[in-house]
Length: 515
Ligand code: NAP
Ligand code: MG
Image 1 (cartoon, rainbow, N blue to C red):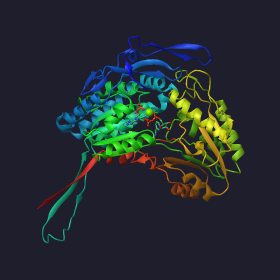
Image 2: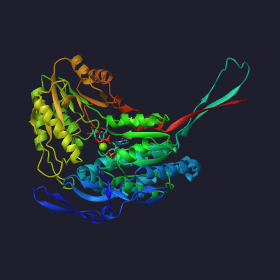
Image 3: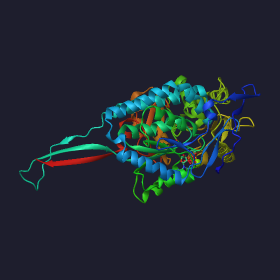
Image 4: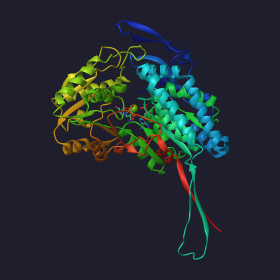
């Protein structure tokens, strides 16, 4: 997308097709109509270039509002502010208890604005508002509360040491954990607020300072969160928010010499660019990337839970989940029953604008994603895959895709190998357990997997054999702030959430004192 000069004619109403097929206007929250600025050093400022870009309602393609197109100049300023806040601001001298309380206040403020954030997520991303209200926003609140508690618990250890070349000498040795410094955080559009929380929570708990770049498609909730960050009393410069494009603002941040660590969530392709950009000064890097997660139904599974579970594993968030259960392996004994069940579930899903109360699945986030998913569907069908449900675009306006289940897929087809990031599952029959484990692992990704079985031993054996960062058993898409999440293989480096995330935001210092 290309940035353009600010248009004075900002759209104040977005048109969205109503569920009966007519077009209704949605009254936008007043905040959406206010001018948007970057948050740098506690001040709301325009991009240095004066450029902006539009953020769209994906159910119509119409403009919601414009946000600043920050670029290298703005990133330079934001990094300088984060550096000053890290080196000499009150954040540095605050007690860990005060820091934890500030993060907790942010969670409380988010909770007070839960409805507003659900609306922003729905408008900007397209997801059903009702889903954002019960999943995205509460998970973000929980994450901040969980991380607030960690602020006071980041301690080191003491060590009895025996130094062979210093006979008779005595030492007192300990470690302490220190914040890594200035962190650049680049996030995607599939869970805009939650991804901001996953990134900001551990950075704030450990005492780091941040420059956050939201995705160009979904900048709104991060900007609104910036206002709450200020209200929570988090000092100026600790969190800087620069909206902008990946190729300009994102690349400037990833390669910036003033940044100590980059935390990225997005495509594996861009993840590799981040690593290259960070390599010249060996910044620390953590990456949460793509997936092609296997979902395995064993012959002894309870189909009453496995069938809706398999449907929800792929159709939740319109398939725009890095951990979407996009390869469904079903024992031949149940293959027909399961694929018919998932196809029936797909056909029943109410597709519509996220802001309509009865919508169960909204549009994809952008025209680019629509074209990408449609291209993959076309390629799959050209190679012989057969849709039992869906397989086409839904409607003529907005970026909707029909919930789709493909059969007759073969290893090597693009739909079987690539992350589709849309509501498309490939169902594959199997007979042998070792064969299915091998097939499940035979992919460049290793983010998540699931197994459905009533045999406890099998559940543990398969969980252990699967090379993925998360394995769900008889459930899918269960997330908690305490549970680490991240990938094996090309699904990433490091973990989000849990105590593991904090490791990636701290350095360990060993101190050794001769007594
Ligand atoms: P993407 O390009 O990887 O975007 C993720 C973030 O990286 C965005 O903030 C993006 O900015 C930024 N970015 C892009 N190029 C950059 C660069 N050269 N240097 C630094 N930052 C850069 O993902 P996408 O294009 O939105 O989606 C493409 C595919 O990625 C999807 O189809 C899906 O397969 C995958 N994806 C995965 C996840 C996940 O959670 N793992 C999330 C989203 C997408 P812009 O917003 O300006 O692009
Ligand atoms: Mg992109």
